[in-house]
Image (cartoon, rainbow, N blue to C red):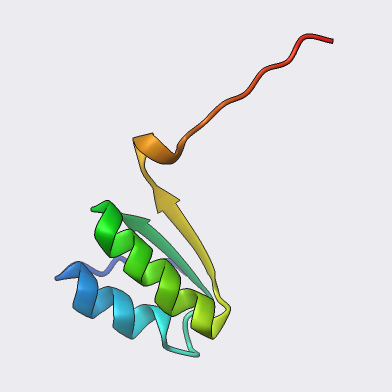
Length: 63
């Protein structure tokens, strides 16, 4: 099941990230809010996924 929740990131993110009923969080938004959500989620040990162009890094090696 997927639920899409919109609203002020700090408020909604905290409620979701600290709820024991939430198994995973996907987040798109400001870096500051994402960091807060990660902090809250780490206290609750739930999986989280952020979507940010800045966080996408690739590496390549030639062997």
